[in-house]
Image 1 (cartoon, rainbow, N blue to C red):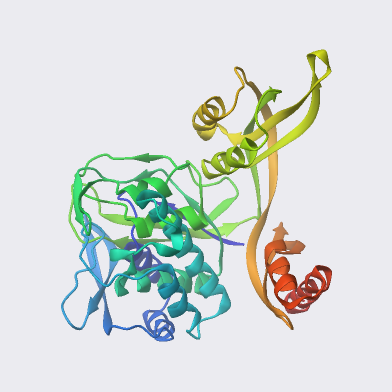
Image 2: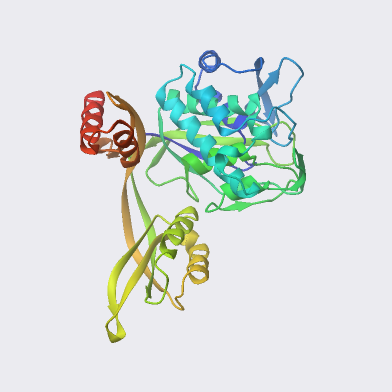
Length: 402
């Protein structure tokens, strides 16, 4: 399968990602034509130029609004129209873009809305995106989805992320780098801030990573490089201000060295487990589960098990001690974990659209599973058996994929 490795030596933003994708082979006229399928409230133009960053040839993408020149820069924030998630969802859903592009773009925006909502203590749907609601950022995120579909990318890996340092002006005033939403989005990833007192990773760039990418300290062993491309930021630093993308073939499975954290708990309110699960999964846990057990004096209890990699051992250990009543953990090394590649695909049924999880191993599809929540929502709203919706979605997806 096609995969990319994001080398974030100078962070990542939406326009840097677009520039790298263009150099990787996405035709500029194709990107612009697809973006015209969006009905945006403001007129804009895309300026694409070849630049050199410390001697490295890269492509710089800048989105300019007609009413005033808007220098879209990873490292600066301007004040634009305020749009909430409903506004952005309508803009994307009303377009004639493919379902895959819509799904990817909306997933990125929804991840971003959740992060902004947590920072501002608001429901995600009520968040005003400020800078991220601006036309240039909508173009960046939707453009990202268009490029990934064109390149047929099924897997994304990301390196350690340079976030920069210092302070930056935004709609709320002067804030530290990384911006609060960026910091929230990059929980579970390894970040650093060497060399530059500028904002190197924006909320848009962080949302792309948090939605689509998996951390890998180096390029995976099963990854064969075919092309290398560079997307440029605006400023010139003592380090190359570029996002480097390695594009190649990935065999379709992953073997990872993992750990299991285990704790026996017999004195905790069971209502806490749901909150604990969500917090652990949000902070890098691959899986969390409980097993009913009996402890001393035949006391009913639960054995909590958390599957993680070594990079997330410290944060998950901290969460378990802070959120549960346990006073000790077992750390068990897992020899390996073999993972099928998964992606979401949408299918139209006679009852409505259903997302399906399509899993592949060694380049072959091994499983198709309709999303339970989609089937449940449709079954409840249309008063039909859930299994009927499920079976039709599965059948349509099988027919679609052959």
